[in-house]
Length: 327
Image: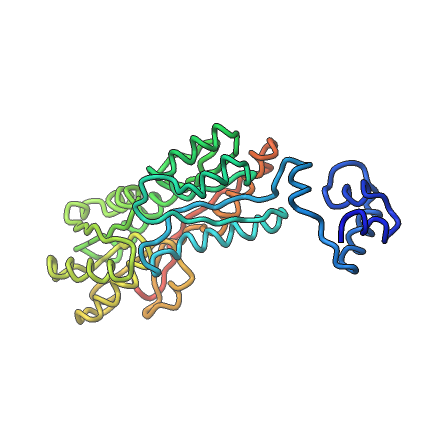
């Protein structure tokens, strides 16, 4: 059914029908509600392409990020994406998600096409990577707004970061483990976590000189292998901070297989507080990061840039130590 046929059927002009769906122009709320209700009755849907051409907006935002090497390493971004998806829906925006293959050296052509053709009103980038520089340059050339979620950088007009909060929480963790009487600390790193290491060292105080650090990785297997290596290097290891919960769960399995009791012999702590953390065995002590809220805020910040309106309010996002059975 075309807009002309629909307008004739309900006895209104096509201009009135168009205003009812576009939100542009003057129209009485009662009339707008009537038009939209009748559209539901007869099954009419406005032509999105036609609306885009008239309004020069797509009502679509993007989410771009580097995909995982393995299926078990993408949980953090997934929980951030829940916040992004909910906020997009609340603000009546479509969401297009695209991932980049691991270790990509250039922005995929399809992603660039979305920007250069202005098929998106704006986009959110998770982590600024070498491959993303071409993407950001294309966005600047087409004046397409974007927001970057990157906890390794300082916050600014287009960058959302809780890096300082994560570092402070890591410091509190080091203090907590020292207060528990732990004397042989270790850490399994992930990616982009220099702030976690620095904060942890500060919290450990005089114990920082004893800290053993393993490069780790992102997966359950990486955590398992790292814990085994650290226990071989230091059989008396009694505290282990893992850069994410996935690594921590893998480390717990390795410690148990090694005959270590958790937390009696070895306290294991993760970071992120993924949904799975409370269901691990033993349940995982971890640093809770406001993943959902970070994604939700990213959409609000992006829409403020798109509409060139100031962001109404910016909530303070906290990171906290969640104590469970593993430490």
